[in-house]
Image 1 (tube, chains in turn purple, brown):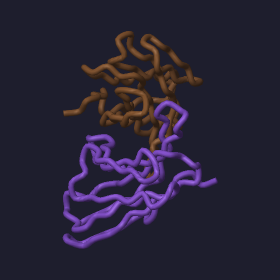
Image 2 (tube, rainbow over the protein chains, first blue to last red):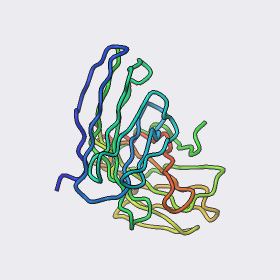
Image 3 (cartoon, each protein chain N blue to C red):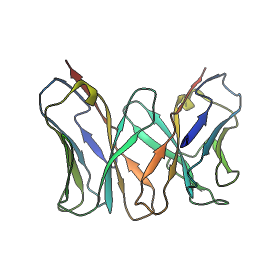
Length: 113
Length: 111
């Protein structure tokens, strides 16, 4: 039982390149989230998916797109990476019947040069 | 502007000392959570507090939710090097809503 799995663990991009961050959960949770973590700013919500087939913007959605491929998978895409998107990205899944309890993946460290 | 303000931002103490971390807001939350994060890993939930004035204990950690549900504190007794990490508070405005995170408190416990 791996919980929430993110790939890749590390990535370096050049400005303007695109990439997709993958996230999969094996806990059968309905809701999934993408956060970014920057020094001194905590975790900020990029996008979330309350259930399969739905996605909504979070606090900082600009420059990102998401796809809830099925109940297990929730991907985050950067169409044209910018240096401001250098960050650590976390995917999380929520147990629907537990009050706002989030399970996090181990993160993707992304550098945009 | 952070909706949840955590203080202090950084704390370095000796093993055996006590400490308190604060999480404050002008907003009311339906629940508040505390997470602990180690380098290279995602945050892990420590506790959820729901009722104003609620106190929960987890071994040497004591969590309190303010009476007005706008603030919370985490008190660690006799800190150990294994307590080192980033402590994050997170609040939810209503059940099922998105969580808002504070900026975190970096705790370093020296042996």
